[in-house]
Image (cartoon, rainbow, N blue to C red; front, side, top):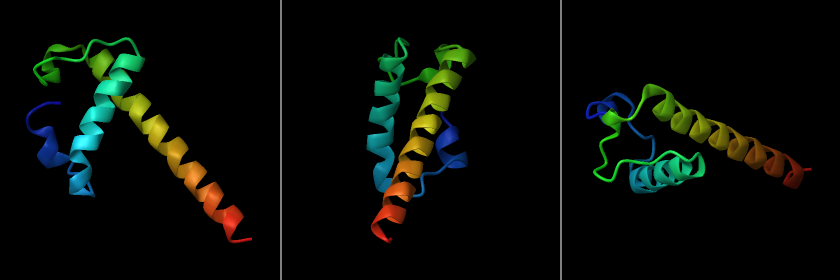
Length: 76
């Protein structure tokens, strides 16, 4: 991540920062993108960084939809 992005896009649950960062590396590995060892993502292409972020968003939407569907099933 770029240095200033953490202040522009703060996490709603600040305790989730470590988990989100770990998940970002896992998603990069799933996509065959070599994540930076030093933690600086600025040397990767925009396409690669966008692919990682986009895949994370898709997975988060899937999890939210599943959670909503499960909540609706338990309330019936």
